[in-house]
Image 1 (tube, rainbow, N blue to C red):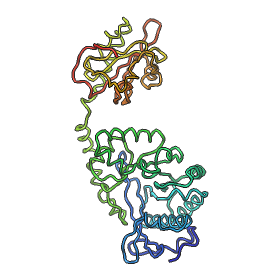
Image 2 (cartoon, rainbow, N blue to C red; image 1 turned 120 degrees about the horizontal axis):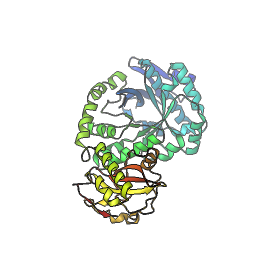
Image 3 (tube, helix red, strand yellow; image 1 turned 135 degrees about the vertical axis):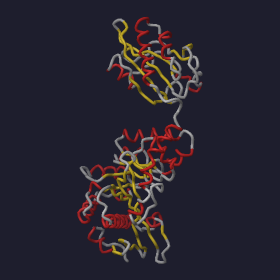
Image 4 (cartoon, rainbow, N blue to C red; image 1 turned 90 degrees about the horizontal axis):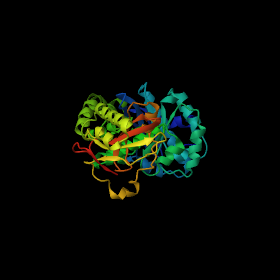
Length: 429
């Protein structure tokens, strides 16, 4: 079949053929098929969408990868036409199977947005012709370089207001990075499979992926991890608070959405019980006893308010094995004297020596300080966050107190896995 002359929906529809197994399309003698893979929401415990993926076969039935297929296009216009044929094909097959709820993820290349916004009109046409509500469409921008990233971002911004969603694919590799998050302002960010693999195989990367997901959440995006293949990967992602998962653990991409989703009920039935076991097995030290720690911090604050002796006050905190140090700030957040450190805490690493002097440091930006001032007499908690002394994740509790006419905030750092035994406070840093 010749190259598409009319890239509108009206021009594309004659290139689709209805067969017993579903809709197909032809491109340069290649036959194109749709397959679908489910997307699961961990929190909602159900399938919330499906990604439409292209499968191409040559005249003798041999598969042609999508990368080879699109790299073989002879011009940007031809690539956009193929891109539209693929999306038209996926919507036709999706609606043909009577899927009444959930998103449909449609891949597209960033280059299609560089020359204006005809894509918006095409999405309108797709939605109207097939009866697929636009709020069920997720346009997934693939990990490929655009000639002009700013132009792509401008076109996405110009599409507002819109009902369909935008997703960034393969975040963490190549061109899909924080720059694209800032420019494109996506609704969903898809973590690349390589990040999932590293988190499962390398010590410490599970913590890194938790921080990464937290940053993406703070940017206003939902986070989808693709390429999930094992229970271990699923557990790590659940612990990291990922929103959605997709991958072979949930099902291989298939033309039949029902067949592609066959494994999901089993995953749903077992994942939360597995996660409870995973949390117990991977707990970092003893489970936090916040009530006991809060009581110790309150006792320390009362002691400091009465006599102003921070070393003596700290002994109340050091009743808790996980406590590391105690310090106090004025009402502006400025630390007015050296911290008192528990004797069982090893010296901080010398590579952080420029940070050791703590007098005159200002902690007013920390959430625990702000919350303590807002609720005097109540212990507030922040964490985990990176300690500027140890370079490790720690928690900090704080309470605002009065001593004379002045307001102070007493703070205590603790790391659940850091202390091996109780002991008196005996050092300063």
